[in-house]
Length: 454
Image (spheres, helix red, strand yellow):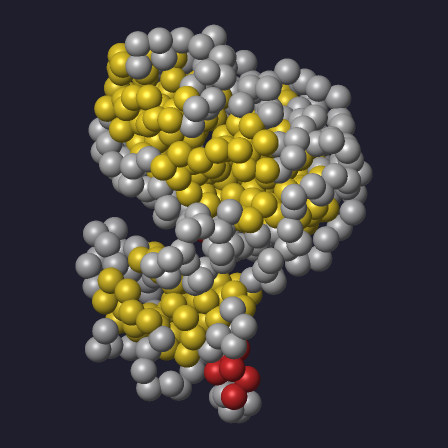
């Protein structure tokens, strides 16, 4: 991925006070496949390096392996001095000093945690344990779990109103939002929403609403923080991931990453949200965060292995920065570095760029795409399959090879996702030039339903 240099103002999130642009600001991504945190300078739009929390896939399977697996979620303290990284494969929360990029503590909690955040006063860290049914509360000084807050199955993310009184927790398995009294650690209300899968929520700049994404059905729900009721639902698109807000020309706009369309959609935030623009992005946009001065929105590319920068005045992408593999969460922190080009305790980029393959239906149905990442003599091939028959086996073939490189069974919604290991580039190179290389997704015992060219 080509890196473009562009001087750009940047800072923390739209939910914080406006601050001047500083070369000491940083953008961070949680890189799920390389188990790194990529650290970017928004002033120069460059990757400064990576914080290595574990080995890159697939080198995480040894019984003696001690590193983190699936570095996925990010949160930070109110004073910006601590970054937390949640790894859902190793069930850990890693505490990182933003001034030095050093790990200062680690907490192991329950199965498959997803996201975490500090309370408004900075005295507790709440981490949703998505593979179970509670929020783990951690002391950020001792790094010890102090209590658990019971929820329905699969809490997906939690955020705190700045008045310190209420927390809002969405779910990845249950179509509800939990409203939690922070002081007593008790749920005071549950709000029903349109689907059971929400990976992300964010406050509007004035904290009057939360907006939450529904990845499974491609929607965004708006909830009033005053009435604690749903105020609207927006149809946003296939694989709606994260969102961020920016104030542009006196109006607040919402920037929503729509992974299945490789787009960021911009909405008004009045009583009736209107689609204002659709910005074509790199492969599978995921995480999103806004600069303090509202001039930039930063987008992580899950299948593009990097970050793109949107100029909010023009809704144009003005820079692309290569980073770690499969970035998930993305945050922007202001005034955290010791110097403009500080690279203390950062490693050089450990990975190469990804190669994306769009799968097209050969008949009347189905969607899909694949991303291929070089592992040396072989490749890691991640498949994303959608809108196929439910509870059905599908096999993936490269060119005319007799055996499939992988097989997947769809869930009740006709979706499947997984990783295979194989020589995609070698197979493509050795294929007969008169018969171009293809990737085929076939129903077990049947013909191809999706095809693509590597």
